[in-house]
Image (cartoon, rainbow, N blue to C red):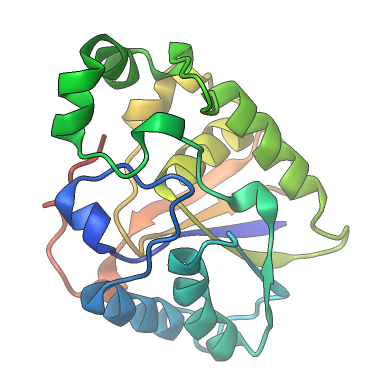
Length: 207
């Protein structure tokens, strides 16, 4: 199975450096333009199925892809964003002031972060694996529209890498990554492609 992994487009909370998690934040104007361009990227591409995180920012990004490929967008809980519990809705600065030690763990040893009411990276990884197993056997080419954390952990899982490599991967808003997962560990074909956006990279607080 070939997996196209798409990170959702920009939201105001991406732009402002706010922890999102399970908060259902919509795309902003730029994010909606990015979603349209992501859809155009897939125009003429053979796709068997399009799956999306149930959160609106991912579904808004997935819909133009579904239209371009003539496939319905199916929600998949395994693609939902990581639950950050008490950090959700707080800026990076606010979390640093209230939970400086935990934030330092997240920045340097994310696989060891334990927050009350939040998921760990290990729990996220198991959830992603369960979600991937829900894709019907025989599916050849699939698009998964999801979130930054899920993109990172999905790649680590598919490539057989440890969660401590989390910060060595980068996914820009509305970026596209292709993985050949016909056998595991998978093969990374290309990653964090943004040529379809015609925008400069960077400018996002990747935390």
